[in-house]
Image 1 (tube, rainbow, N blue to C red):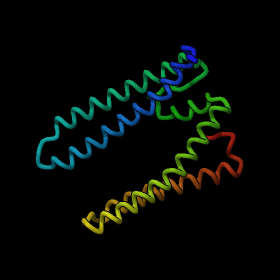
Image 2 (image 1 turned 135 degrees about the horizontal axis):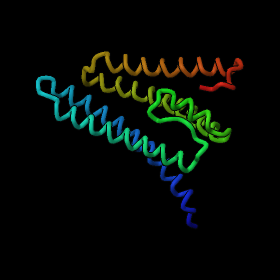
Image 3 (image 1 turned 90 degrees about the vertical axis):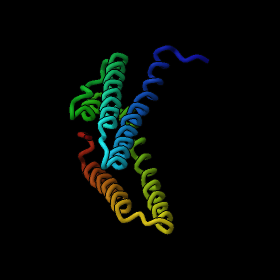
Length: 166
């Protein structure tokens, strides 16, 4: 059965935004690798590619969000504003908010397993190769940050601040 045109566009937008985000994240990673591997060489080409990739991803994200706002006129927020996420969430209905919160909690659960797995992988690698303490510090910092942000938010929401979710 064929989906109506409107539903096809909505579905494709739902796939496009994560791909655009992954493109931007990949650009940051590749630029970091470029800088690390070229400490004594100029990184101008890497910087230019990084800026082009970031500009492309940002433009695509803004265009995708603008198209979403055309499809759903009740959606609010400028994707270039710092408080875009808050405005966007405010313009979501209860079902959309539920999906966002459920997906966020699923991500939190999965990332706990990922942090544990990456920490274990680092431990196994360190048996064969000296990787230093930086990977452990970085993973530990990210894991603790995620856990404390989750706990603080859950505590706030549990004590009556659920109406003004941010």
